[in-house]
Structure formats: structure tokens, C-alpha cells
Image 1 (cartoon, rainbow, N blue to C red):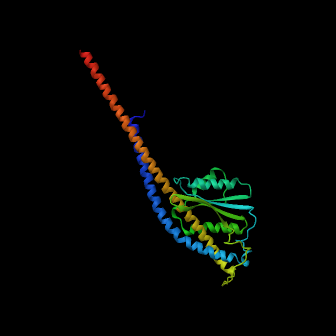
Image 2 (tube, one colour):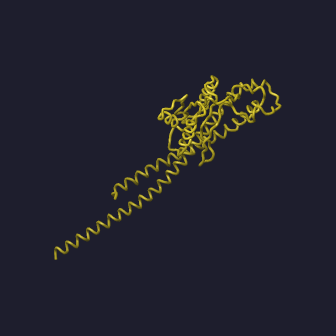
Image 3 (cartoon, rainbow, N blue to C red):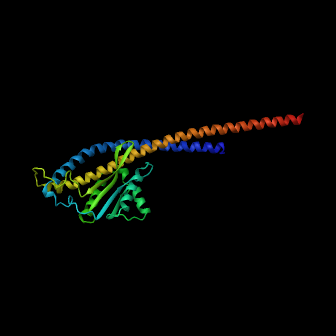
Length: 287
């Protein structure tokens, strides 16, 4: 049986851990509120921009544009977006599991880009070469970070290094739910098949000129939205995980305190028994 001092030390240790998890929950909650506000701001603009591109993509002149040409996927790139840190439940595990499934499939030549330290560490441990890595920037995530990643992917796509580029990330659904998503980044999927009947729309200037202007902007904003989705989902996962950890710490403290009181009662009873036994022995010795 553990001594009273050992039990007390365990209680203090769990209490200290609980203070940390509660603090991390509060920090995650603050970051979550800010991220939700940013996400609510960027989503409508990204959706409207995507709608404009979807309309132009249905025009016959867009069929031959590289960003809409759907050639066979012989060389595929997967961009895995994970967190830079852990302590967020199964957030990173679910993403890495999907990446492993794509890696094990034998349907095409695959490359990976790691966004986030957890994904990068996983690939490095398993000796998987990377086409790019971006780590330690979620703490100060900015639009410029998204532009940097999007531009790099666009350049590699333009050079025909990849036929398709997919993003693996978590979408923010609710506070307690994050959904793993596989989204095609390039080539762009139109709202309706390009071969369907074209929509009669008048464009000024020419649709191709419009595409050349707004396509990069749309891809940049789409990447920024994806990164914000990931960051928001990460904070909600961390807040939930830390709340669960704090609740578990409370339960453990209750059990340890009960165990401590029982051990203390047993120790006191033993001491009293020894005192009474010693007194009886002394009394018998005197008589």
C-alpha cells in the first residue's frame, strides 16, 4: 500500500496538472472565438468568388484553361494540414490516418506537402520524402502564409509536376465535432460539368482575362479559408480535450482523496491499536 506521503504527492501532482489543463482550455477558447470571427468574415467572400469562377468555368472558352483541364491523375500531390502542437484529442491522428490510406493506395504516383509540425514529424519518422513543408506558423497565421503556400502549389501545377492537388484538413463543424475533409485544390472543379449546356452570360472584359485576374485571388482565399478552418477546428478540439482532461483530473482527485482518507484512518487505527496493546502489556508487566 502506498504511504500517505506518496498519496499526497500524487494528489498535488494531479491538481497541478488540472491547473495547466484549465489554463490551456481558456487559451484555446479565446483563440477559438477569434478564429470563428475570422472564418465568418472570409467564408462569404470565398464562396462568392468561387461562384463567379464556377460561372466562368462553364463557358466554352474555359475548357482549355490549365486550371480546369481534368487530365488523368498520374501524379498526385496531397497537402496534409495538421497542427503544430498536440494535446488536441484525435485531431492530428485522424488526418494522418487518411494520409496513410492515400499513401498505401497504388493508383498513382504520390507526393506529399506537410503543413504543420505534427504531419511533418510523422513523415520524417517514417522516411517519407516531402515536396514541401510549412511548420510553426499557425501561432501567427496570416493571409500572406496562405498566399505563400497557394503560390508554391500553383507553380508546381503549372510546371506539370502534379496532375491533381488535394488538401487533407479538418473542417470546423461544431465545438465538439471536426470533420476530416479531402478537397481538390487543382484543377478546379466547376459548379456544374463544363461539358453541360453553357450559361448565357455577357462578360466584360473577356472571360479569360477575368479568369487570369481572379483565379489566383480565388485560390489564395481558398487556401486561407482552409487554413482558418483547420486552425478553428484545432482550437475547438484542444478546448474539448482540455475540458475532458480537467474533468478526469477532478474524478482522479476525488478517488485519491478518498484513498488518502482511508489510508489515514487505517494508519490512525493501527497506531491506536499499538498504543492500547502497549498499555495492556505494560499493565500486565506491572502486575
